Image (tube, rainbow, N blue to C red; front, side, top):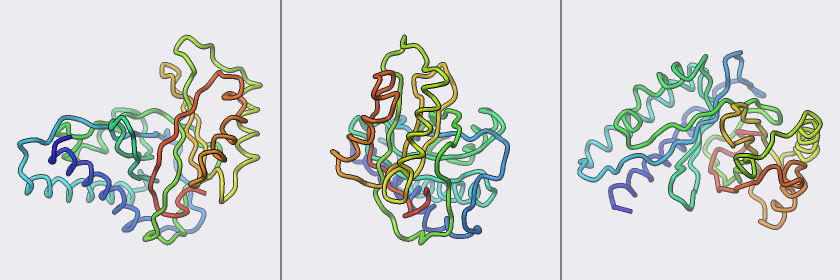
Length: 239
């Protein structure tokens, strides 16, 4: 990884963390997305290299990136964001936002120079929130490590799980939902993708987390597989 690319990664991480420290304590407790527009789970992914870009330009992009995130939050269009650690160096961070459709979603990021210049890209998919909520009654300056779990079909050609299995998955997630284990669960609802769900846990020992994941019905039946990533957000933003 080049020095400039590494710098961009650090900038991106700092910005989504900065959003938490500036914005996540300004609405009433137990705040939930008050909208009927679709909710989108977004991975911010690595784009082109910043090699050849002056540091002063990167700093200007950083300021605009942060300003846009803050504006989206204040407008009630962004609910959570945070950097993540991906061994493949592809997924750099996450955003949860709402928009009527993908065209409108892309427009939310038009003021973001990292996106518009191709240094970061948006990988978005519709999400149904089923367990947990986005909260703002928190100490936004207290940042902690969570565990993000991406649930995917075990194979592209694998059949979809049926209604009974979906109900079992939901009931299991509800049964382990508490402040020290599973904080959030969302189903990814666009079937052309292999991705099927997002789980956010408090940071747990690997053995404990693996045991919880192994008991998720769709994972136990091997219909789905799980991949874990460290995720950093304000303490309690999902609960």
